[in-house]
Length: 553
Ligand SMILES: Cc1cc2nc3c(=O)[nH]c(=O)nc-3n(C[C@H](O)[C@H](O)[C@H](O)COP(=O)(O)OP(=O)(O)OC[C@H]3O[C@@H](n4cnc5c(N)ncnc54)[C@H](O)[C@@H]3O)c2cc1C
Image (tube, rainbow, N blue to C red):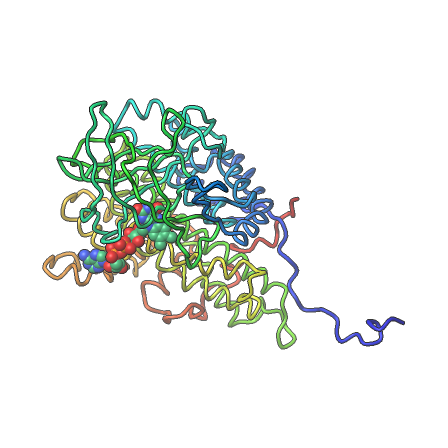
């Protein structure tokens, strides 16, 4: 008998097995229903294929890419300035898979099909669960397309590279590459929300290009092939496309000062940069920079909703899986009433977030052909970004607690999800900015108010609490003089009412009743796990569980 055998201290038991590889689409009943409801069902086979990747290989790569943060290589070994960021191979592999399946381009490559933005939103939802960091450059590449169309000549040459499904990390002029990525540079030291305080200057050159001098304080994807950048030209703030490599193969005059040491988002490099006379091409008219770049921002804000919903989804998956396998006090956690209340409440929040996100994706999809959908997209993007991004941090924290101590340990992905969770709420317009944007939409684009209420009225009569909230909102918008100071409460209730209306129309009464009672009627506490005793807890948990999945890979 060996020493180890003689002195065995314990047998490892009552630990949840690793979740293992699973198909993140096929096992997600709620996502599939939302995709079908909003018109993206034709992409099911593609989503199922990416679901296997996202719940399998991509999940493993996500761990490695986040354990090995990118590093700035400002100089080469000879002291020459190179301004490169070095990534772990797993980062490149994730980018390659994301682009192969079109997370950055699916909507544009399928622009002739109704629901292409919905299907693309589902791709992003799947991708972000495995790694949210790479979601940043992929999101920005997708979102840059409408803004770029303001310079048709540039669009014509760049778009085939931007919408290519090949990831090409080589440092070459864009037209020598098989695929390109695009980032954005708006935020400066003295102001991020208030981009009109930018100090970066653009001087027109005889050849039609501009020379850009200034800095950007957050420049999240310095490895991209180009960026949409704001700078002041003679006629005012203007949008520019700034390439990384100039046509002659030399580097543009973009100096990376340092990489940000961030709370989370570790697989992605965010940087501070200076432009020392960098060359750029104008996109849109001089003085129209904010309006032009807002076309990109509208889409990145939708992606913040997608990102936060998907973080919630992954946290719920992990929490339910753990509770299905862990026993305490002689009984499995999943069977204990109070744990059921917590898990069901988390699942309900996630379902409502996913439903609203996919509805907004449909509105974006229909925007070009349907003015009322365009008006709904305008207001519901701000409403949804505000609320869904706000809900992610407390939800992820509660999911973490379901795993007990293990949820605080890096070997699970909960700490990573927790660090990532606040980001979407800050980036691309923080909470207050979203609320102010809702007020701007109400004032300047009254059709957006009509579209919002049309969406709520379409569910009229189906749930008394929803009708009451709609009436409350109508009244709340009457006194415009105090609306700004009240706007967080008003926007929160707009979000809850929209979520309720979508769930009511989706037709699962157990889900919509639980949502309306808890979120609209006040039969709920401030923490998760405070649903009423009459709620169909097991049904809500069952909808969110991946337990019945067929393991893949
Ligand atoms: C990880 C990460 C990556 C990022 N990547 C990029 C990037 O790639 N490109 C880029 O351009 N930017 C990027 N950003 C910057 C981000 O978009 C800004 O930080 C954000 O827009 C807020 O700007 P700010 O930091 O200057 O804060 P401020 O604008 O100073 O805002 C501070 C606070 O004041 C609030 N506030 C502002 N105005 C008002 C008002 N009128 N009334 C009430 N409250 C108000 C805001 O809501 C916020 O809570 C990134 C940020 C992070 C965290």
